[in-house]
Image 1: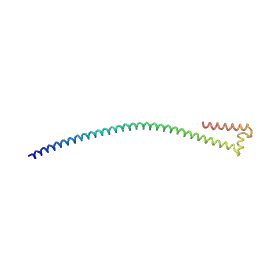
Image 2: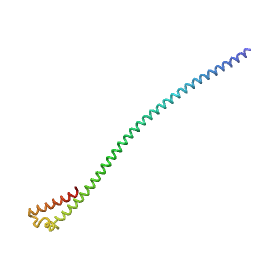
Image 3: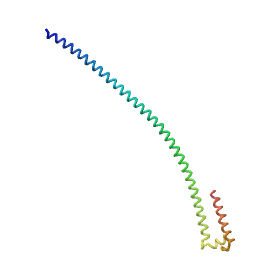
Length: 148
């Protein structure tokens, strides 16, 4: 009969062991779930920090883009003004070059007759030379007046 007594005791021990294993598993599962919740919370906090940093970076870049765009527009406008000024100066230079070439043709040895008519008959005469310089000076004022 003792054999039969051990059998119920062994069944009781198995049952207690099973309950004990279930409790350990339950405790382990709870601990695992707690660690999982902590990891999830930390991950959510990290993501929130990243969002905050990215929003801040985005604002900084938007301001930087606005400033850079304004600088580009200012420089583009200045460039347009300078191009217009260059075109005006180029036109003035071409006009003055034409004037100089025309005057040079008048004073060339081949055109001394035309120069003497324009400046006076005697090129060696100081008064005629002065008259010729005045004609040149007056022409320069006329040409300069074209550019003002």
